[in-house]
Amino acid sequence: MAGATACEQDVFTPELLGSIERELERHVDAAAYSPNLLAAVRHALLGGGKRLRPLLSVRCAEAVGGVERDALSAGAAVEMVHAFSLVHDDLPALDNDLVRRGRPTVHVAFGEAMAILAGDALLALAFQAASATPRHADAVVRSVASATAQMINGQVLDTLGGHAPELSALGRLQAIHTQKTGALIRCACTIGASAGGAKPTQLEAITNWGETIGLMFQAVDDLLDVTQSAEHVGKAVGKDQDAGKMTYPAVLGVDATRTEIERLRCDAVNSLSAFGSSADPLRLLTEYLAGRTR
Image (cartoon, rainbow, N blue to C red):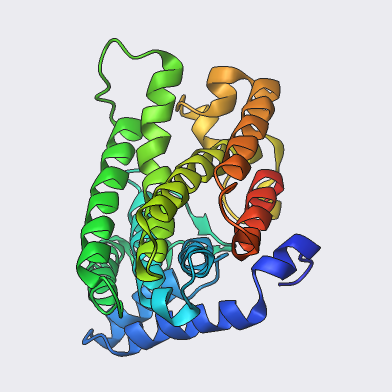
C-alpha cells in the first residue's frame, strides 16, 4: 500500500491482500455471466478498495486458531455484498454519487440498467462464495443472509425513515449504523471466527469486537465526511450533511464524535482481553480504524 503507515503494513500485508484479490478474481472468473455484465462486475468489485471485510474474516479466523484458507471464501462473500451495496447506493435514486474509489461509479461507466443488474449479480455471486467455505458453510451462508438483510434495512432507515417514534436522535443514529454499516463488518468477523473453528466464548468475544468496530468505523467515516476533501478520501464528501442525513457529527458535534470514537476504541480493545498474541492483528486493526484518514 503506497504511503501506508507501519500499522497498515503490519495488518494489510501484501501477501494477504494478494490472496484476497486472487480469491475474488477466482469467483468472478467462474461466474457464467455475459461479457458486458462481467465487465461491470469487475469494475465494481476489482476496482480497488481496502478489502477490510475479507481481511477481518481472515484475521478473526487466525485469532481463534484457524488459517487464512479457512476464511477466504467467506470473506470474499462479504466483500461482494459490500460491493453490491455500493453499486446500488451510488445510483441516482439513492445517493447519486459519480465517483467511487477515485473512479466513475458503475452507473456512470455502464449505465443505470447495467448498474442495477451488476449489483444483483454480485449479490448472487456472494452466496456462491459463502457456500464454498471449507468449514461451517451453512452457518456462513445464514450469517451473510442475515447481515445483508440488516444492511438493507439500515439503508432504508437512513434514506427513507421508518424509526420507532420513541427513539432519540442518538438511538436512531445507532439503529441506522448498527445495521447499515455495522452488520457486514460484524458478519465478516463472526464468519471468519466460525470458519476458523472458534469456541463459543471466542465467537462471543469476536462478535462483540466486530460490533464495536463497526460503529467506530462509521463514526470515523462520518467525521471524515466533514473534515477531509473528496480528493483525499476518493469519493464525494459533505453530501450527507447537505442532505440532512443523520451522522455522528450532525447529532453529537465534531468534538463529541471524536470522544465517541475513543470510547469505542477502548471498548474494542477490552473485548479482546481474553486473547493472546494471536489477536494482535485485531488490536492493530482497532488502532488503524480509529485513526484512519480515508
